[in-house]
Each structure stands twice: as C-alpha cells, then as structure tokens.
Image (cartoon, rainbow, N blue to C red; front, side):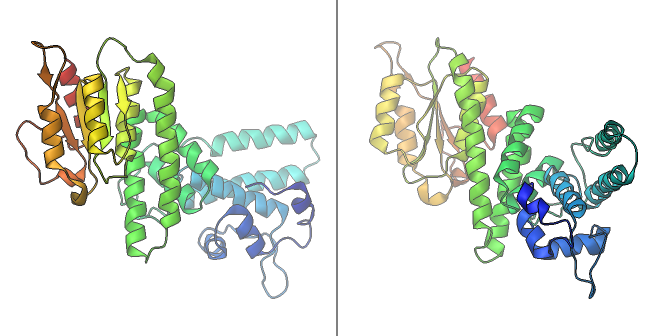
Length: 346
C-alpha cells in the first residue's frame, strides 16, 4: 500500500514509527520486528534508546518486501531482493549522475531482482500463516499471504494471474482449493480466528469463477442440451459447482447453473423443461445428502414419446462419500467430473 503524499512528507525526519508503518503496509508490528531480526530488513537509522524510526527509503523497502511475498516469493529471498532495491535507491539518491541515468540504474536493478520465481517449491516453511504443507505451488503461498493480510487487491491479482498462467482447472485444483482448505484448518484450530480470511478468499474465488463463466458462456454451443448443476436442498456451499460451471463454459459446453439449496420441486421442473444432458448434484456434508431426490431425478424421462431417455446423474461433493447407488455416477474431483460429462456427450 503506497503512502499518500501528505504522509510521505511527514516521514522525512525522524521517520515513522513501527506501529504507523505496520498499519500502512498491512502487517503486524511483530512481523516487522521479525523481518528486522531475521533478514536485517530494518531502518537504516535508529534514535536514542534503539527505537525504530522508518525513513521514506525504509518504508519503500518494506513495501517492496510485502509486494514480493504477496506474489509468492519466500520471505528470505524477498528480503534480499527488497534490500537490493533499497541499496540502488540510496545510491541513486546520493549519486551526482543525471536523473535519467539514476532512473535507468534503478529500472535495470528492479528488473533483475523481480524476475518471476519458479512455479513450484518444496520448502517446508511457508511463512504464510496458513498450514499449506510443504509441497504446494508457489501461487498458493502468494495467495495465502495476501489473504492473511486481508489485501483484497493482491488476492484478486493472484487469482487472476493463476487462471491466466495455469488454466482454470489447474488453478482451481492446485491453487484455490489447497488455499481454501488451509484457511479452513487454520480457522478450526485457532478458536474461530481467521474466519475473515476464509470469507475473503471465498468471495474473490467466486468472483473469479463467475467472471470466467460469464465471459465464456456466450461462446457455448446451442445444439445440445445443457448440463444442469444444482446444490441439493439445504446445501448452500456452491464454490465447487461454480468451478465446474466455469470450466464447462470455457469448453463451450452449455450449462444451466441453479446454485445452492435448490428446492426439489424447482429442480424437477428445470429437469422437465430443459431435458439436460446430465445433472450434477452437489452435497458438501452428509446432513444434506438426499438419495431419494437423486434417484428420482435419474429415473425421470424426457423428450418425445418413443425417444425418451433417463438423465445421467453425477453425485458430486464429500457429502456423498458413503453413497453407492447403482446407476448414479460418483466423480471424486473436478477433472473426473469433466471426463464423465465428456463421455456422456459422446
């Protein structure tokens, strides 16, 4: 987060306090002190009594650290890169070279230290505040750090970049889902803390998925029946359904998304009216599982007399984990659901 001109003007001497800087960049004072102790990422000058006072150059260095870690760079590497940029800035300020030469030096140095890191790392320490584990994509770490800081802009940038670089299916299965699960585990183990982190992630992931869906659905074919997606009655969790609808739309497969907690009468009315090529019923927990409804949907026949056929039904979500009804498909994840739907279409 950049300081305003008014705020920067007030940081020339003796500088801003650690608390002031922490509020501006969205981390805790403890984190700033830890960065100073571990990586030497502290103020260049200290007042009597060793109180930290951060100059504008120090502030810029910390902002660079925050930017790099939000993009997924491990803290130690990000600190080294931020310190290099700070050194270049100080050299440029002290130099008698022309403004254009100084700007060129800084630009060259920034381009060298900010090159994208590898897409996957196996370091055991995530530094994100969320229990991601040791072998996740670096994009997960960047997304988790941005979410823990409640930096909505950075969260959305991370999600958009993941979809563009990895593709939607990979971004969902290897970035969005692991980060959401880590936020859920953190919430459960910390006495209802981090609820806001999970809500922020869910909202922005939903926004990203719906954007892909809305951008792609106009390209869908109109010569085949849609795949109908619905949450069973009482089921309000719909993110996995939103992911499936977005991927199908991206693949130009017609989709009819009804959302969560669809009443049985409404579901059956939609099935009768559109004659879907397949029906996907989502259940997040065992308490919402509805086998009679699923079998009723599967037994419903549509189309003209003599050409009627039954509806293939996919039971999706962990709620159905102990269900093995004959004739009902049970995909275990997004990729398998896509494969089943593709087979049904063919």
